[in-house]
Image 1 (tube, helix red, strand yellow):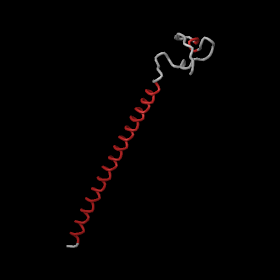
Image 2: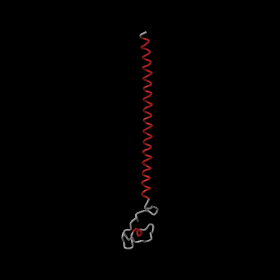
Image 3: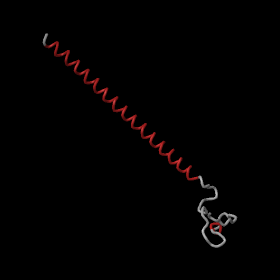
Image 4: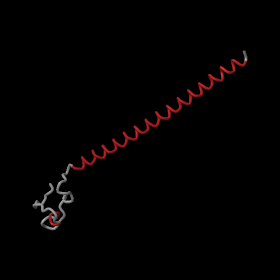
Length: 95
């Protein structure tokens, strides 16, 4: 079993990070407002940040693809109208 030296914490003092014998006390590197479970909230905030970035990039990609598809459809409609006009003019020339 691990035996710990319990001393009252003094905020802002380097002595609070050591045991009475001068050894380093584990967990003293944490800030006064941080708990042992604060690492999991950091992981969840990292995941939330990743999720926002991934979602934003996905939306941008979808908007760009839709823009390209609209441009392609307009170009095909223009080609179709041009072919229809040429077909009518060729049909009238042979009559």
